[in-house]
Amino acid sequence: MWNEVVLFACIGFVAQVIDGALGMAYGVTAATMLLGLGVAPSVASASVHAAEVLTAGVSGSAHWCLGNIEPALVRRLALAGIVGGATGAYVLTTLPGSFVRPFVGMYLLGMGLVIMWRAIGRRGSDRWTSPSNPKQRRVISVGIVGGLLDAIGGGGWGAIVTSTLIAWGMTPRLVIGSANLAEFFLASVVTSIFVATIGLERWPIIAGLMTGGALAAPLAAFMARRLPQRALMFLVATAILLLSLHGLLQSLR
Image (cartoon, rainbow, N blue to C red; front, side):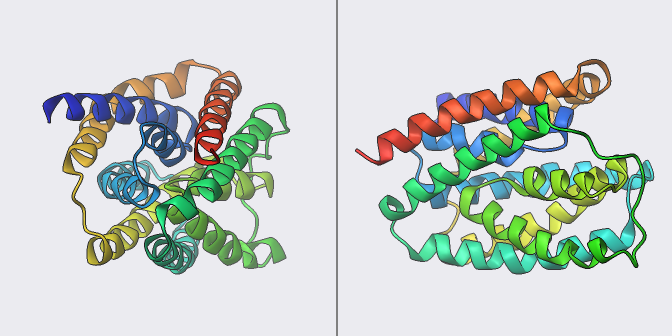
């Protein structure tokens, strides 16, 4: 049991370092690694979201204290994400794992491509779009899609929501902070649904992810200040693409 906790703590450590440095990819990284170890898609997603209740809560609180929050954006993303996440969790728990795994693999492959695009593509401008801007009214749609795919794939909220809103021209620090805080509510609801349907039996996974994430937080903050984010995103995207391709090929055999 303790060997499992240490293994999953290493996964949580790596995922949190990446997420802390980039503002995205915690769930995608952790879920991809868990699937590569043979964990069922529903169990992987449930475990990642249970761990994210703690990590997203701490991260969101820190962003709130630092003023990296836009309350109106948090409300829209949280409500939309909950709707999408609840739908995704229900779908994931009602379909056979063997049926879902190839689709999850393709989704994670797509997330790897999204992160790669963010690494080599243009950056959003440093400004906040006015709430009356038509793009603001599309925030709800982005939140629903992000929550849906996040629950099904075990991650991807940041890759979808954060990258999209920043590309629209919203202030990066407000987007990252607001998305992190909204993710706490999304993870809480999705985890509650998993508890009510399949339960949380793989506690070594959850304990390991939480422990590794907590230990990685200071290092992640340091990396966010010191290392080039574009280079980090490229490395993360490459790793996710390779891991998801490996898992996808295995699931199609």
